[in-house]
Length: 365
Image (spheres, rainbow, N blue to C red):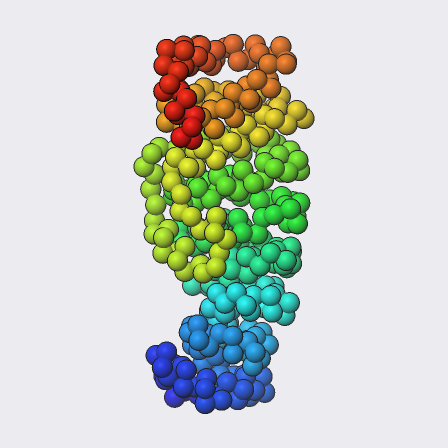
């Protein structure tokens, strides 16, 4: 086994080990061997999982079950190797369902309870990838995926790349089957805090998550419970054009098979547009709009209307949101105390003065 560990350093040797039929013996050794044998067999299995060529055969030959057993050893190095292997195997789309069904998510979440940054990033990577399988999102979320990603990003990790991967995983997990659970687990507050880190990629993903949450009544109600959450959304509407980023592309590259929309790095302008749409979604909800107006959303919309760079679709959504408020005298009074009326008059005059330019802008958007 020690020799095999050294041989695994190249893809050619890894293929040779796999094709020679060594994997069943390694799996058996990992299950039935003595402590030292289990350690070495686990090391070889973990090394082989690095190579795409080996991942499907490893899973077909029982490596998942063997690694689950090794993860229970009282050996931090072996546990870490198991976590690395799970992260590598999760990159293979065709085995993701098998991994979830065999209970890997709970083990991965448990293995993240350590003080090693590599454990955090491997856990985040594995859950992020497993969250891409549409039919098992709820299982991944409820078997520890959501809790692990929030703990790593909010408490355990100090690395921005790891935090980014956690937010990407949360974005992948969120859909109609998981929203109730994720909101109850504290997703809204966590995303509000993570959006303040100052990384453009994280901010972009947080903006997307808030926008996705704004589709669901239970999430909208939660979003207005704390002014700090609404202020975080309003801040995303006003991001500078050049916000800092720390290696986000490398993280995206390492998180193979993540949701296509989640993987886009985006930018400040896109982040602003998504956040503004979220604000409008909140205003369209009659049950919460009073709290939203009181929180200062009109000042955010005022600043947006003063910005000439937004396309017609975004501006139209803002107009519709403001129009929906005009059925209430109290809301109209609040609008009158801002510069919104004068800005709207100015925009109307602009359109009248140059209708062809306005028409062109509407078409291009």
